[in-house]
Amino acid sequence: MTSIANDSISLRRALQVDAVASGSMGLLFLVGAGALEPLLGLPTILLRDVGLLLIPFAGFLLWLAPRASAFPALVRTVVGANVLWVIASLVLLVSGRVEPTTLGTIFVAVQAVAVAAFAYMEHRAAARDGNPAAAASATGR
Image (cartoon, rainbow, N blue to C red):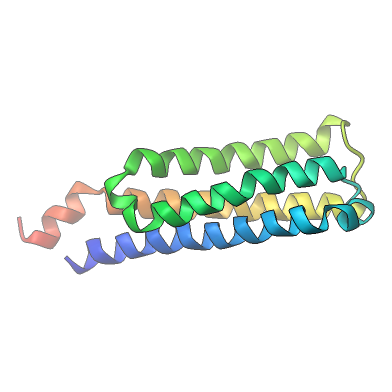
């Protein structure tokens, strides 16, 4: 039973860390979009819109974290959303629709790597959490 409990805890923690990072970035973008635009070369409206998206996403993750085992489809949706975020970040950089500064390019790339790491951690923890073989061995069957 310890393995299953630890896997549930690791999934909960991965979702919580994702929530804190998403919420922090959302607040930063909402409050500091104007100041960030010249530093990053990303339009204020884009940064604010991303902030408006990230705040409720963070709240959803905080809600989901203690319930993740009961909602595996929602966890898969979060993983998928994170993967789409990574793809969208990379497309943003190569699309020519924005002209980020060097710092902006580094920022977008680093946050894409961080979000990819969240997707990986959440996927791995969810896979372990829902592993029937682990559940059978933990109960002695």
